[in-house]
Image (cartoon, rainbow, N blue to C red; front, side, top):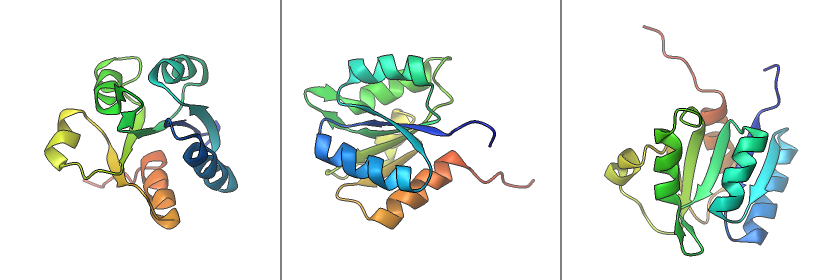
Amino acid sequence: MTQYQKILLLDDNKDLLQIVQIILKGQGYETVLATCIEEAEQKIRIHKPSLILMDVFISDQDGREFCNQLKCNHETQSIRVILMSGSELDMAMMSRVNADDFMSKPFDFNDLLSRVQRQMYPVVASA
């Protein structure tokens, strides 16, 4: 990759943001933090991340709706999105909001890195 792969972390839990940021920076990823959807929208325009790790419930806002908005906008539809939640989500809902992946919280360190790597460097299937 010729350009840094940026990841936007969106969660209202600042402690979790810092922990995930430390983990990802340790693997060479550049991270940008946001604690609300409005802040995330601004940082997406400025930093143009390749991937967003997003909580499903952000204060009184719904990350699923925000994910769907991103995926329906031609300027942001190519950004990969991994939703995170302490609640189980069904695959039909994931499909409806066009999320690329889902992680349950609390998550395993190795699972986090594996899912991030899969989204940042997707394997192209041969025909």
